[in-house]
Image (cartoon, rainbow, N blue to C red; front, top):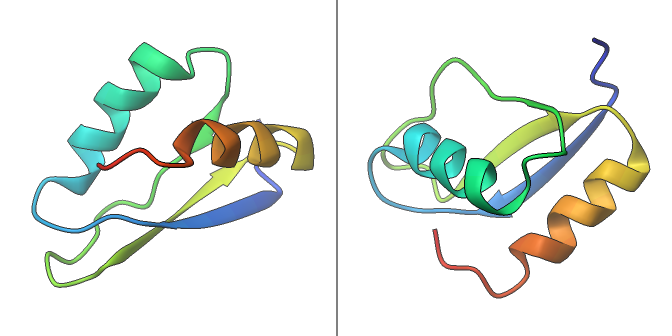
Length: 68
């Protein structure tokens, strides 16, 4: 799969990748994404890659107001 678009959203605290994966499995199972290999604990943002602009917009719409 080719992941051509990216989106950055606020997320803080430890275990960002497992928390996002768990949330995505429950709330966005039809959106394919690629996560970075790791995210520093001190980072307040995370960037993920998705296949299309439509997927990016859908994911950002689902993330609106969600506290991860």
